[in-house]
Amino acid sequence: MRLRFAFALAALSAPALLSAQPTRPAPADLIVTNARVYTADEARPLAEAFAVRDGRVVFVGSRQEADALKGSATRVLDAAGRTVIPGMVDAHGHFGGLAQKLRAVDLVGTRSYDEVIARVVERAKTTPKGTWIQGRGWDQNAWGDTRFPTHEKLSAALADHPVVLERVDGHATLVNAAGMKLADLTAATKDPTGGKVLRDAQGAPTGVLIDNATNIVERKVPAPIAAETRAAIKDAISLMHSVGLVGVHDAGASRASIDLYEQMAQAKELNLRLYVMIGDDSSALAHYMQVGPRSALYDGQVWVRAIKLYADGAMGSRGAALLEPYSDDPNNTGLLLSAPAHIRDVADRALKAGFQVNTHAIGDRGNRVVLDAYEGALKANPTADHRFRVEHAQIINYDDIPRFATLGVIPSMQASHQTSDMYWIGKRLGPTRVLGAYAWRSLINSGVIIPNGSDFPVEDVNPLISFHAAIARQDARDWPAGGWFPEQRMTREEALRSMTLWPAYAAFQEKDMGTLTPGKYADFVVLDQDIMRVPAELVLKTKVIATYVGGKSVFEARKP
Image (cartoon, rainbow, N blue to C red):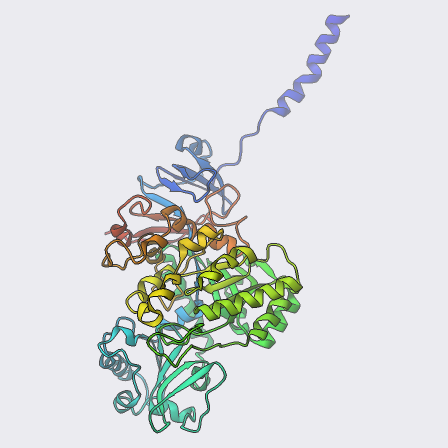
């Protein structure tokens, strides 16, 4: 009897044992192997292989284990020992601005006003008379004469074209006489709130407009047709992919721009992780707050859940708001572009509607105004995990550095600004205030993260420039020796996270992006050398071999 019961039990158990056997996982679509993979994931920072299925990472580990996921249709990418990192994201760029710059006269790197004029004259040769010519990138701080230019030489050389030339930081423009005439800019024109029209001794405009005053002329420049804009955006995306960027936090977009981005995403023309900050326009804010935050639209191409405000201007044009006057301009403390009450009002409304607020603040007064507004809004609307941000946070009074961590505010900074500004920022600030400039280590030690970016097209789009600046605080010529205030450097691990995981966190995307971890998007970059180990002076020589978004190649370097 007992023997028959045992046989019966075995017969009943056999199907259960068979069904309990582990099933073989579906084959991977892609396996990346023979690589030095820096995952940016603290749980497993280094690996030699990973596998991708349906656009997401499904395995990270050894080459042998990854091979177990190989099927007949699996593509195998042999990295030949090269370095692989998560796809880099620029935490503060101007997507539309980059597209526009690719069509404008490039003035970056000009060493004199005469060179600026020569480049514009060359463009005029192929531009119909009476048509606006736009340019961007001039910086009087790089000229022998560092004073702001006046329009006379530009007007004499280009009498038949209205011309508007944007300064490198986007916070000042130079306009010729034809442009001023079309904009009705005269001695009688009053300075707008948050802006300044520079004038000569007789009160006539010199042609340079600061911050909000730039709108006087810019609103007269015809908008490009939609097809041109779309083509320019595609060119900008291609450029971003070629330098290893898989995404950008677009720092201030109009409703029309956002509509275009969504149309392109629906048509699968982006191939980009685009985190959009809604520009400070009352009707646009009312519309999007009614719609509510939206994330990972169109298969993870578009997020619309943040608002971009402006507190002040920029250091290069002396528009950044300072607590004390500029050391090299003792009658000037900069400009507040928005009233503190406006920042507070938008912050209150955003907290109630579930939106993030990201406010441009460069000077120490600008940063304090924003922190004060955020603090008031958070007291009135207590919110956990709000992730409000200060964009740039370049000059901070030391009393305010701990407030970022206390309030849960993220300083979104651009390391390449430090290496661009270090030649002259001491003259603007003097020996004491400069200690609070680009203070990455002080902020990190206080308990915050720093998502990194470039502010393109203000700086070059290449993210490795900011990576190099973060770890070296030196320019491309390795100046100054030892770095500019080197005690504020980031470690290489921090610098990598500042371009991968920290931007993801700053955009509420860390569950889907930022590290090469199973379950996240398979966004990654193959580099020709190991930026985590080569000497700092070799980092800028690194080339991107390939860029992948969602496990699909969006850029591959041409073989020599």
